[in-house]
Structure formats: C-alpha cells, structure tokens
Amino acid sequence: MTILQTDSAPTPVDDRAVEAERHRRRTAVAATLRLFGELGFEFGFNGHITVRDPGSEDLFWANPLGVPFRRTGIADLVLVDSAGVVVEGRHPTSTAGFLSQYVLHRARPDAVAVVHVHSPYGFAWSSSPRLLEPVNTDSALLHGLQAVHEDFGWTAGGPVPVKTTAESLGDTARVLIQRGHGFITVGRSVEEAAFYFLAAERAAKAQLLLRAAGERELLDPALRDKWTLTPETAERHFAPHLRQVLHDHPDLLDEHVPLATGREV
Image (cartoon, rainbow, N blue to C red; front, side, top):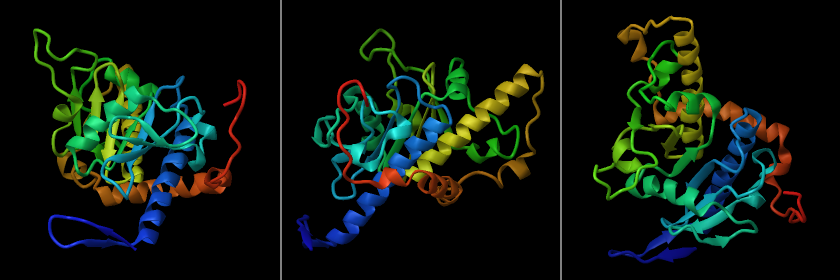
C-alpha cells in the first residue's frame, strides 16, 4: 500500500489496483495499434496513441517510434514525462508527436487517452475541414461531439492569432478535425477514444462516397439524436474489437520480448 500526500489527509493507494489498471491501459494501446495497422491507418512513422499512467498525472504511455503498429506489444510501449522524455522503455518515441497530444491531456481532465493516426478518409476529409454530417445512423454517432481546428501548421505569434488544438476542441467535443491533418480523438479511456476514431473514419468515407455520387440527405433530427455516443456506449462498441485482437494476437501481452537488432524493427 502506498500513501499519497495531499493538502488534506494522506490518501492510501492500492498498488495492486494501480498496476492492474496500468496493465489494462497498456493492453488497450497495443491492441488498438494492431487493429489500426490492420485497417491501413499506418503511414510511415506517423501516428500516436497516448494514455495517462494511472499512478501519476504527469506520466504517459505512448507507442514507440519505428515499431510497426502490427508488431507493437505492451513490452514496446514507452513511458514519458510531460516534456516527452522517455523515463521507461527500450525504444525512442516521437517527442513532437507526444507534445502535440499533451496539449489535450493537459487541457482536458477527461482526455485520459488521445488518439491520432493517419487514416486515409480522415485525411481526405480534413483537406477541406467541416463537421461530419449525420448522413446515416453510423455517422450520427458523432453528432454534437466534433470540432474543427483551422490553424494546424500555423505559427503562434504571427500577424493573425491562432488557436491551439485544445482551444479548438473546447470543453465537450471528442473528435477534432484538423485542417489538412486528419482526426484526433480524446476519451476517458483508450477504448473510448479509439472508437470515436473508428466512427469518424467510417463517417468520412460515407460522406465522401455520397458526395461523389451527388447525394446528400440527412437523418431526421428525432432519429439522429438517439444515436449520439456517450463515453459508456463508445467503450462498449469498441469491446468486441479489443476481444478479437487479443484472440488473434496473444503475443502482444508478452512483457519480455528480445530487442530487435540491425534493420529489423
């Protein structure tokens, strides 16, 4: 049992519960990376999934740099501090990528997990960013949960003020559509944030296909509003994906994997 010192009485912490939650979060990160790799969301070394460590407000687990999504296991994940410095792990990670996500971790207490990968339809949609419309019940899942970030790539301090991603996301959105740079999603868990990302990619594909066909018809608001995700339903939607990945890839749970050498990663 560990004692955390606070401004009031010391708070006991069950180390076993913290370790169990840490293992659960790391497993969800590795499984999500495997799933996203299978879905074609990996492009070069781009893309980041980060989750706060349950034992500290200032430590985060992140995917390693240079390890393919479809080969990443929990042993490959790295623990970084709020400056992006690796404090535990056998691989480097993208400091710039982590810091771009830390902006959201810091701004939103509910942003325990942040997901950003380079998915094809998300990137196509973000080239001329606008909110995804409820063209079917799947895309209605994200109604009222989106925001647009127009200032990606612009430098603060220039002649025109720019917003940070946190300012664009605001206090309630879960999906941020970044101009020219795809989707970034947040959630109280990896599972929640990951399902928002899946839903956004699916909605972008549907809307792009309908636009190409010259079609555009929105759901009736009474039907649309019944489908909007909550954190709980997002997690439940992602649960079957997680179970399937763990069934197909039991090796991702290996805690001790030999470090790759030479050109092999």
